[in-house]
Amino acid sequence: MAIDRREFMRLAGLGGVVFASGLPGWARAQGYGASAEEFFFVQLSDLHWGFSDPKVNPDFAGTLQKAIAAVNGLSQQPDFVVFTGDLTHNTDDPRERRRRLGEVKEITAALKVKDLKFMPGEHDASLDNGKAFREFFGDTHHTFDHKGVHFIALDNVSDPAAALGEGQLRWLAADLASRDRKAPIVVFAHRPLFDLLPQWDWATRDGAKAIDLMMPFENLTVFYGHIHQENHHMTGHIAHHSAKSLMFPLPAPLSQPKRTPLPWDPNEPYKGLGFREVELEERGVKVAIEELSVVKRSAA
Image 1 (tube, helix red, strand yellow):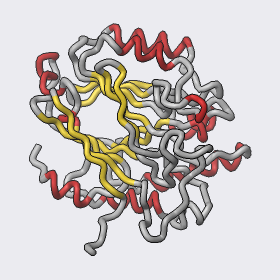
Image 2 (cartoon, rainbow, N blue to C red):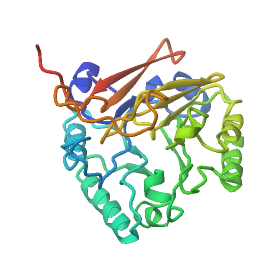
Image 3 (tube, rainbow, N blue to C red):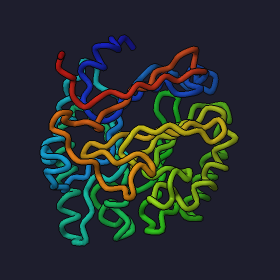
């Protein structure tokens, strides 16, 4: 696929831009019966639709639309768009939760790309075990295959105890059992699967069991959200990459007593919000990740 990477980066707005060619093992996908045609997808995370604190983000009603406009403005449209959770901000009112989920579905329908993958966050699903989310967006965990890459979307938020649960772990084990251990696999989750900071709810109670199931696979990469900042972590050979939020950044682990949102800085608007581009180097052996800001900085 011919694509001017620099033009793509210039036009891309919020969220994460992920090139499938940058995933470990992509270059060998043809050896497993797949076409291995190059493609990219866009990752958006932590929209928190319904959040309304102007001290944290005075553009709380416009950030999502800016992201959609940026994606629609790409000279080459992505193959699909994935939303990795917290589509809405938390509310105890089930009718308000459904209203917000419906608004997200309506707003994101403006994307030119019609292949949209939605995952819940705890703000969407933990108070009703994902019932409202499923009404609007379908299953909270699923798999799909696209041009030689196997994708797995996990649900570590519908259980208020922040666990995948034995049933989902059995489902994951059965899915992985049918995969070649050298084939490229991408796993999406909302919370980190490893113990980044359990006291801040930055962990999955039984995430270590999922990682144990993934460990035999040589070319598996995990993308997640939830922590509203860039973070890169390795569990053995498995890389875990977090996405920035579209609404507000959160502090670095233990950099302050509580995980309260960072205040808006009028001197650096949209600071801490941004998107990611992942590109293949050295025939899939090396993955280069570049985090880009929400808006282009004006020249000084």
